Image 1 (cartoon, rainbow, N blue to C red):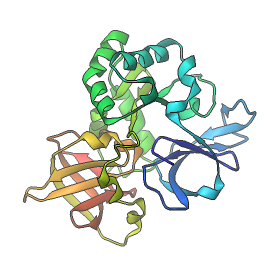
Image 2 (tube, one colour; image 1 turned 180 degrees about the vertical axis):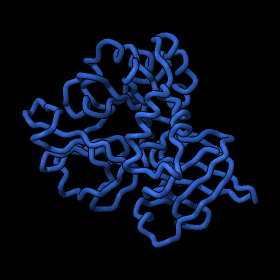
Image 3 (cartoon, rainbow, N blue to C red; image 1 turned 120 degrees about the vertical axis):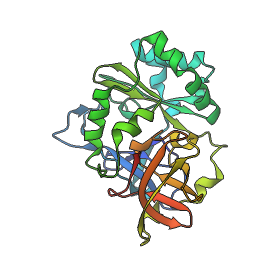
Length: 291
């Protein structure tokens, strides 16, 4: 019922962003998105003021506290897009991505006025592959850029509150985030990705976010990245091969690590060894450094 990229509203009016596809029977993994605040600078048509939260932190919300669920692929905003946002949307359609596989996430999905940007989601593994092949044609046609160095520095600073910069070089991992479209200086939209209901990989059942609570020791490992496709989804997943030939699977729910590595990257990772040959990055100390 609750899947990655959905948004929830609790009974107090606060909004949350769902993380991942498998949740406890009575709760949902989320990040805080917007909270009710008299000092907030986001004005909802309902008359409530909100503060936007930029935490790369996963918590649980009880299902009994959920008042409303928002599905990006069913957002009515899709039919009201204008300007560059309509052009980007139409570019997805031109690549053969179906309307029902395109969603709107973020503030626009929740009913806030579109005053600055629109955030898109694409569903389906085949559609992710279509976009990766065609994204340069979108950039060329619409005169858009890749993520700029200025925006990388901005995001590095933003994420520093929730990540240890000694163990992560965002100036390199963010360069791999291929689905970012730089609309203009200071305005970046990154396309996010979700699975269709019938294609969630079986491996996603094998790692639970609560495994981060295990009292296993943190480890530091190095290796070469063997695959990258599932870093586009959440949880992010990829495999490395260490110098002694071991294959280690890496998992993380962190928003910051979408498409963080590519095949052939040599990386140093700090994470929690939760089971043999499986390392989870879930704490502030953890990180990915491209060497």
